[in-house]
Structure formats: structure tokens, C-alpha cells
Image (spheres, rainbow, N blue to C red):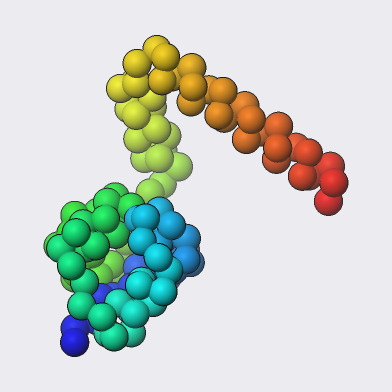
Length: 113
């Protein structure tokens, strides 16, 4: 069975397999099996995994190139701004509320640590 270059992508992105599985909406044991060649990936699974790391499916299959990994801070900022500008005013307000809740929880955790 062919193996997906899961470990290579995880290393390049600084991402744990379990985190990648959650982002893609697949069970972590499935991703582990794909990495070990114990399971054949479906086209849907390949698509979900690629989308989760913002890659095309063919890129996922070939593996990361040297130096390919997380976006730079500027690239991430541009991407987030483009996403925010695509939201409706109501969705933007919900995103702001969610961010505020996240910040409050993070501060509480930091104080408790």
C-alpha cells in the first residue's frame, strides 16, 4: 500500500498528527494508518487533509519541498484579512465575539498557571 508523506508534512508544518486530523475532520487513528501505509486514502480524505493545511491534493501526495512549511507572518496576516473581508457583517461580529472569548480564557489560564 502506498504511504502518504504524513510525517514529512507534520515536520514541515510543526503540526502533530492528531492536530492535523482534527483540522481535517478525520479520526486520528485513520491518519496514523495512512502514515504507516496500513490504509489506502480515499479521494475525499486526501482532499480534506490537503484543505486543512491549505494545499492542493497533488501537493499533499508529493510531500513538502525543502523549506516549505508554515506561511510567514505577513502571508498569514494577508490570508486572515482576506478571510475577514469576505465575511458578512453578522459573521464578522460573531468572529469578533469568539476571538474575545478566546482571549479572556487564555488570560484566565495564564493567571491560574
